[in-house]
Picture 1 (spheres, rainbow, N blue to C red):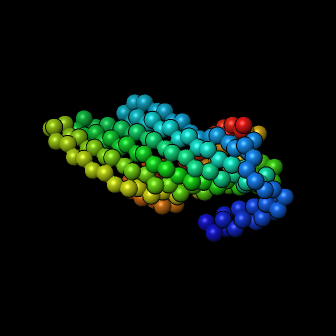
Picture 2 (cartoon, helix red, strand yellow; picture 1 turned 135 degrees about the vertical axis):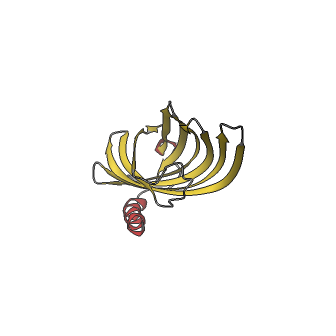
Picture 3 (cartoon, rainbow, N blue to C red; picture 1 turned 30 degrees about the vertical axis):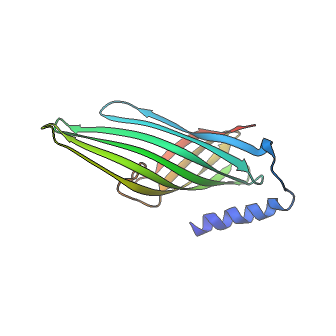
Length: 170
């Protein structure tokens, strides 16, 4: 993770000397939308607002909502709902490469329901720190990502996952 931060700082220092002041045209809007239905249901909405600090660095913040429901078998069902905030930094390397880091704080509400009518509820704060690397073709970015925090309740799980996104600029 230190190497990711150092590379971001290097590219930031290269471009900061020529830029000053807020420029509305450097604002970006991006995020994610995930849908899956069946025995495992997932609904995820993750809007983000960013700013192109330099030609090599985009930084911003966002909110995220995730609902997951899993019918393990006829005996019990788990539902998790997450609401969180995040900050991110994306460094653009060369013409097509991108690396990113995104720490998050998510509030999780969990319900475990058994077929006998028993129901257990809990809630907790779930920290995550997602890192990623991928390619950028114009406004489209495809990345492989991984949650460094590895909390057992993470909405991202414990494996590498992928994302495809689109960024809008003003």
